[in-house]
Image (tube, rainbow, N blue to C red):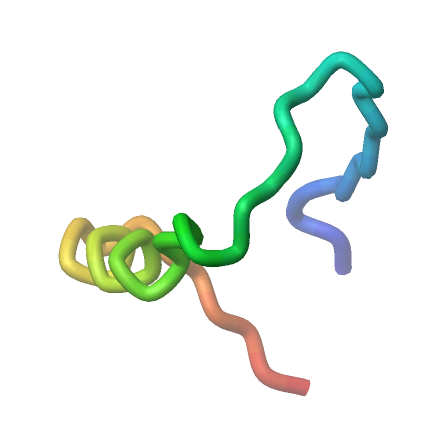
Length: 42
């Protein structure tokens, strides 16, 4: 069962990712606190 499709796109004009500025830990914490992060195990 598919709930959401995943699209991966490349934008050559996008700013380069700076790993030192990555905030994934904070993002995950915020999404979990808001209850909007869906985790499915298989």
